[in-house]
Length: 537
Image (cartoon, rainbow, N blue to C red; front, side):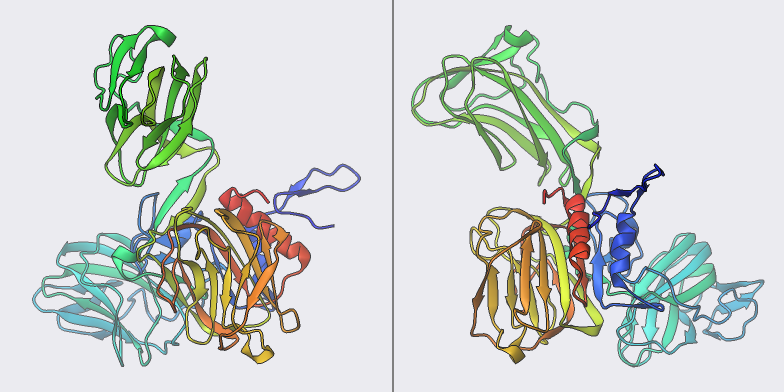
């Protein structure tokens, strides 16, 4: 018997149910025992403690609508290694090299203004590994400071920053030959720092250094917990239709129906907007939009459009409330009801509301990739080979094309794809030349898949590959002809490393592990990602 995530375990004596911890279930997939881990990655956009707005991790993500420049990999537990700094509390001046203007005393390092200079210490960094630096700014009266990893080709972790008082964190992976940690103070920098700590942070963490290419964190759900104030002017039509603009061949008058309604009378040829109001909103925020509509003499299809999102419906003899959740892409939303060309008649509309969704009762967090250039990239410390299992949960724009995920280097390419329109769910390229299984392969039964939890398997024995979509095995079409290797040492989310295609996609979670999972473990991964994304298995 397989126990899915969220299920409980109860014995025959009636002991209370003990719920399984979904995160622990996923963490156990990577635990190889003895303090070692299977290679791979685990990204969880719903865990805001793993998200930062910049690639160096100096600014945490605290809410939706913010860019994501660093996403920490949870596969190795986010457990820090041993302390690498000697005398990080500045008990003496020993172990530090002080530039002009730097001094150490009373357990703090002080920089006086006058000239730019360095405070530094030497380490043996390992290329490909990640490190977390923390330090306290006890006082800053003026100026700015930069963090740099030096020696060889110096790595500028940050530009010059006017660090505020408090504790700060910086994440980085060194270049070849880096062996110095430098605090580079500007000439006017006047501050005290203390409690410098530097530790390895195992994991294959994903970054995006280009600010315009970063996805944003968003949240959706099915049940709002709290809503903001009403944004529509005169949506209840208490005594008139003021606040609304009429266009096209229509007249709009007030009617007492439904306690106050707009009576829309359509005459003449042509379609077009018949009822309109521009609603002030904030880009990236989600809004609940509702309206009550019933037929007068008009019984043909109407279309309610807002921010490029359209609902088509046929008004009935009684009022029908129509609800839509819309994420704004600009600073205003135009509410409009349109009808087909050449059709005449009348209908009633009442109680139009637009309110921001402040919180969801069932929040589903995701990274929103714009389909233009957004992507997150991770370079693995060691190569991933067969066998391997990966799983990802996504939602995409039905009109979009592009790649969701791929291997990030020329050692091999692995794609989850939205190519073709309607697209296939997955495409794997150049994976297994040694067995003659090189080339691309796709699922043949997932044309038009929009929301999906996909699990892909690679083995060392025939059939070498398998695919599951939303909990069910999928048939695979194999297209031979490509060549390549059977390993990869990095991943890109949101785009294709090889072909340069980007995907307008929402990614709710990713789990990839360098071993083949048991049937029960696959069930657990799929249940975990389904809960994150709202997909029904």
